[in-house]
View 1: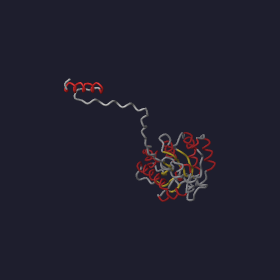
View 2: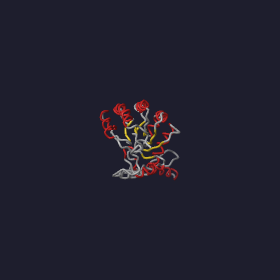
View 3: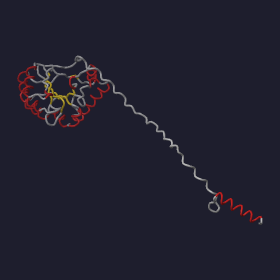
View 4: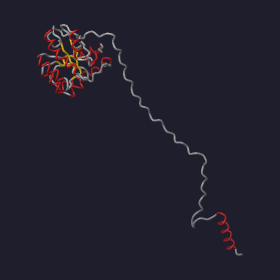
Length: 260
């Protein structure tokens, strides 16, 4: 056999053993066997934690009222005070009763209510009554908070009142619930607000019958008393009914005057 024929025979045997691909290409490598081991689990980095700063602790409730509170009218007359308003249901009723009796009262106004019903704040001032700051949202723990929070609350309430009655003097401040602290009294005085407490509390906030409110007020009132009642903060129908008797009765027996 010629050498060229022998070479061709040898090449054919090699291709038969190794397998061949397409013309002009090298044979592909055999696929690697699948690994029996599981693929590695991706590592999840823990998300950063956001901690809320702890609120400052409240000061303890004082065991007794601080000094410097006004608990008398400053005259022989009785001072009538109405808290938590203004309220569109009850404040106009009290204003009508006061106008009919030709007497004046002090309205301890909550800032949120003043913002909601500015026309009632303006009417209170227009009819000659006195204004008292009663905190922004009736925070009974306001006096126990940091001094900066107390001041900010009183300032915000004053702003809401003056937005409704720009030139009205705000003479007084009354702490909701009577939970006064010495720090709060000091801040109020620094802002030109005199701390107004009370000497007669018929607890009309607890919705007793009108006859009970009348009995409690008449039994505790003396010359110079400061009477606490409410024209907002819930159902005040019994207070309205009681005042129809109390306002003329207190005027006749003691006289009614603004605190000073």
